[in-house]
Image 1: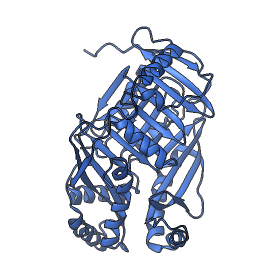
Image 2 (image 1 turned 60 degrees about the vertical axis):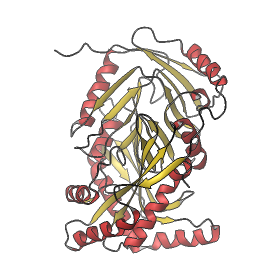
Image 3 (image 1 turned 90 degrees about the horizontal axis):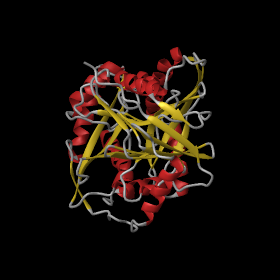
Length: 428
């Protein structure tokens, strides 16, 4: 017999004054989706759903739909992406033993379009929003700065040590030479260990400060700052930011400007990028009335690297209540050629063979979903997955391999992509 349907009550109120979203989380491990000071911070758990396997996206979507149907919702709802709202992180692989999760926060504070809102959720009587926020603010005042402190972490080799990585790339190039795939995206990990539990809020603060133009996220021990937006859907519009093609920054503005020009002209990087763009466009076309795709990519400048970037924008079909939700679109897009390769199935099989380890949630969708289907889902890049004790972590980085790839350069690219998390964890 099925368990009784969960009946939650949601109460939402607009905040009259701006709030430092992270300040309310002092003393807690928050759920986070933030960029340029906006987004959502969630605390506590009103409901959660855990799933795995090939149907994980569909199962999560059905659970959330049922939760919304049975919910009592009080407060303004004219803004896209209003309550009920869930934050989620999904595994990369259909066969991953790492579960995928959607979580409805007990308290969520959001900033969008210059307005701020607080939403409470509960099984019976949800707390009054303003009172719940005031309680959090007061509790945060009693937490000493830096408490608990960020202990030093020690780095160790992952599944593929750095000196072995060029050999893995060589195997991928052999497969490309035999036309098994046109492109495959390979990921490597490094391990990190601390003597005490790591304060993830301190890590989040580091990432939001250093990588303001990225989407900083934290859920269930997965923390990172991704530059790549898999999908954003709201008010009938859909956007996807495709990144593929990377070059490391030197720290010298003149030299980096020259490197950006070289990246924009690189036949190897342009080929890799075009394959990623085509995979997104082909997937989104059936869902859209019209798609806008720039003729050439721009160069996205981040503190550690530069990427070739293309923003694909479209009008969704079925605007009058029948448009697909952001999670449905994320499920259709995943895995893109930017994190898997092309052709998709052959690249997926090859990367699983060459990597020889479970990626977990690395390079899977991470973000949020609202009752009206709106949401933002990034690709979980530049991240670390912590264990439940918050003392051990796996840091991940990858790169797209095409025929013109050079193994030593691909190793250097993963080192550059590991820099954000190494810095945030005090490893570099």
